[in-house]
Amino acid sequence: MIFNECMMKNSIRSIAKPLCTAFCALVLASCGVSKVVIEGSYPSPNVAKLPLSLAVVYDEPLRNFSYIEYSETGAEEFNIASGASHVALFDAVLPAMFESVVEAVSLEEAESLGVDAIFVPA
Image (cartoon, rainbow, N blue to C red; front, side):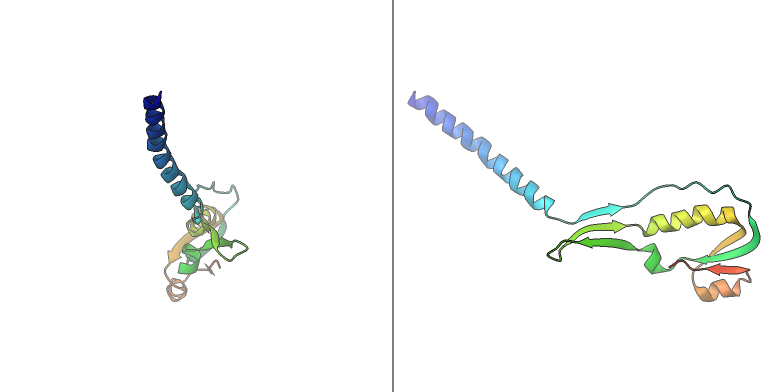
């Protein structure tokens, strides 16, 4: 009987330590920031194209945009990266709306292209 109790205590201890470690790791992981990256594909609209040429400039703040949600204590809880999805949306919509769409790196480059309009989403 004493032998069985000893074996049972050792068995419980051998299981309890890894379970406790796993539980602590799970609790710590749940305290971190939840990062969400928005991805997707967008259909092009079925509209008549305007007979205009358009230059579009995607600046770095738009490309790297993230919405950050903070908890009541000021700690970062959610980081939603949506900049790439904004660019993908405009890349799907604009060519369906305008006869010609070119992407420019800067506003100065867009002005030098001789297009009818320049679009810089903010």
